[in-house]
Image (cartoon, rainbow, N blue to C red; front, side):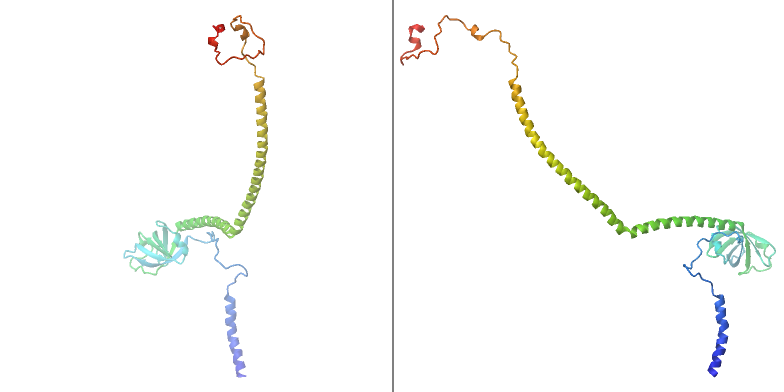
Length: 273
């Protein structure tokens, strides 16, 4: 009975804690990945020209001061930008110029701090300053425009990277497709090669037969050309009429065979003298 009563009291005390925890729990999206908003540009509804900071360091003359701001946008400031600031218990507004920017820190040059701070009081570190600057608005706008340009470049690079990744992932398939296309072309070329060689061999056989036939025809033509050649020599008279007539009777032919002794010599016979 005592344990049951204690459990009821403990549950009653724990219930507000559970309800409070459930109430402050952030609302998360049911789908997707929780990430930072990547399209954070300059919002015209926000007053960028006003921000606060606290003094973290200064020189002895209160002309060089270093302040820290909780606004991350102060990193866009550049040397020479003008920042007007005032203090809660000050009498006016002072003018400062940026000399350097670090993470959440700004180094300022203040020509005359007497406009916003009394001389008889010590300018303490940790003093809260309220800044007003048109140059800061211009720097934020430039940063927003440049970020938009960078996002466009990023999308372009991501598109190129996507194409490269797609090519690398499908490299083996592409390689097989290219190899198959060239193999098909090689097969077609080999087929054309065999067909061309076959035609060339057949043409050689036909040319050999034609060569023999042409040689035979040429030999026959040469023989007929020689036969039908016309002799251009002009004969004026028969050569028998050009012989000297000795008046010697011409015997009949064939003549009767004569037997002459071996001792007979023509130059010894008186008839031939």
